Length: 444
Ligand code: UGA
Image 1 (cartoon, rainbow, N blue to C red):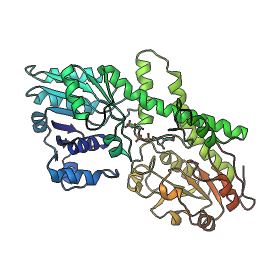
Image 2: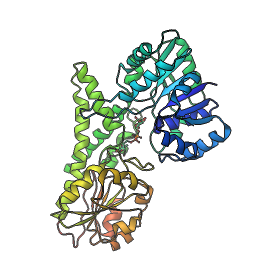
Image 3: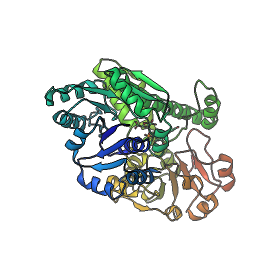
Image 4: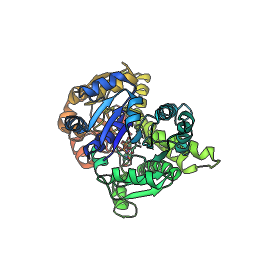
């Protein structure tokens, strides 16, 4: 079992650090933010992730997990150092490596024996080599080290499960010794180990996310065709997904993908391609289709209402997906400001992401954690996140509470026949539009 320092206490750092501690390693999760570390020491987790708090507390009690802001000391004490700092998107779409370079410098300055330095953060191809050169520059050169790329594939909301039962571990190491050390750490989680070069491991992460994003944009393009020819995309997903060569995952059509990964990583991959003079047409189309899905959903609403001015719209879902309070690149961040700009009055519902959403959207709309209060007196209801309590709405009550039964569903949550019987005008994605017979001001 190894002595591990994890640098960066975001989703990736906290979850992987905690899971490595749970499998018996001695782990310290480090951050330069002393305030965040103080909270973690008190057992306060800065992110919402099901199961994480309990697992952190369990391992702190066991003595396998601790938190520290004394990064220099922890680097010196560790045998293996995981870099899990943020790589946010710059305005040009490139990955910002400022934090990665900073920690590489600290590692170099504190290198006091052989260590394996592992990148968990999603970084452009070549970053492993850059880390290697920064560490060499700032270390005395007396101590050997190896750099490894070990990308993570966990999803927010199911991060613990994804790590504990990972489908594969990708290890791109610069030496056999480093490969063996990192393979040993992963042994309790998976037997599927992909042994790759540093550069190959780096590209695997982008290829995985870009491929999943491509599946989503592909099915969204098919959905847009379905709408024009009167077909149902959910049946198309079922019909193609049963082919094991295609698979049924990531074929849910809707408002498009958001989050901190797919939008950032598809943009970064486009840059990687441009930097090596490759015209990656497919990924450009994936990004374009995704941006278009948000516009199309709003267009459906505007068309159904005639004008948005003065209309009350209830928006269900601020988080980019359920079971997370993360709103980064969430559809709501684009859609709510657009609706209010057009003169609509927006009431937004989310069970946990309101605090995060307020930081981005501000007070352009009102917020509530009460779903039925949000829907009450609205002229239209728009679904943006497939939260469990949105999926299980009492639709008869919803109809009674609304000024008129108009629902625009960016997640295809409800059965068309049910919505028809209940008398809704129900506009979803890639499925035939359902029109209420009565009082909608204007229907498609
Ligand atoms: C994604 C990947 O799934 C992880 O494997 C990866 O480790 C992670 O990025 C990362 O790079 O850190 P995540 O962004 O947490 O994970 O969320 P996903 O569950 O992949 O969903 C991403 C977006 O796609 C969400 O907005 C979701 O609503 C949307 N989506 C997903 C669809 O619109 N349709 C689908 O069929 C599936």
